[in-house]
Amino acid sequence: MKQTEQIRRLADWFIDEYAIQAATFILQQQLVLVIAATQNVDHFLQALAAFLKQTLGKQFLLKIGLSHSSLPITKLTKIYQEAQEAYTLAEQSKILIQRFRPKKVSELLQLIPQNEAESFINETLGPLFKIKNKQEAADLIQTLRLYIYNHQQINLVAKQLFIHRNTVVYRLNKTADILGVNFEDPEIIQRLLLALLLYVEK
View (tube, rainbow, N blue to C red):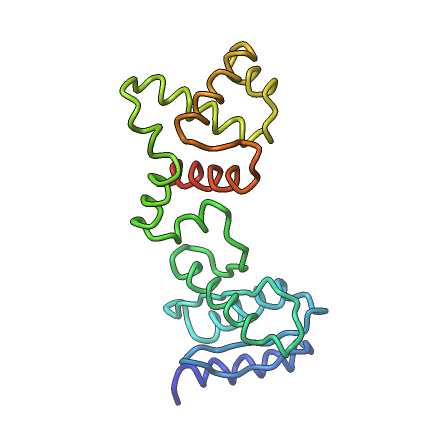
């Protein structure tokens, strides 16, 4: 009997003993459990993991990926994808049970290919990088970043940078001239925000 099938039979027995609403099947040599959302999933999986380790021995390496969704069974594909991604994370760590979590913005940005990210950054912010005075370029980029991050609140930017409000206005006007953009255009702000986020991440 293959180990995966043995684990499934043990899990089925444990499910019956535990009296939990769940079903099992094997997909790509992995045991998949579909558990009713009304159940105490975390407690059950901890108990199941302890049972399997005790039955199969300490040498048995067990990792569990848990979906974050409480979707209907018709969305099983999405639920499985979440669990599979969580399982991959569990394999890369010492965690026994890894619950799926949506990616952070920084993690999503890392999914953008390096060459595409660099092209977008250069297309959007490139003229600022060509300023000969590197300190001035850094000041303009920092002011622009805070201006966008703070929802275009000039007084707040001035307070955070410990400079006069007029200095912020001067830097922003110069930045707009260099980039050839209008900060009143929401689409421009979105592009600049994405470029600045990529610039920090890359």
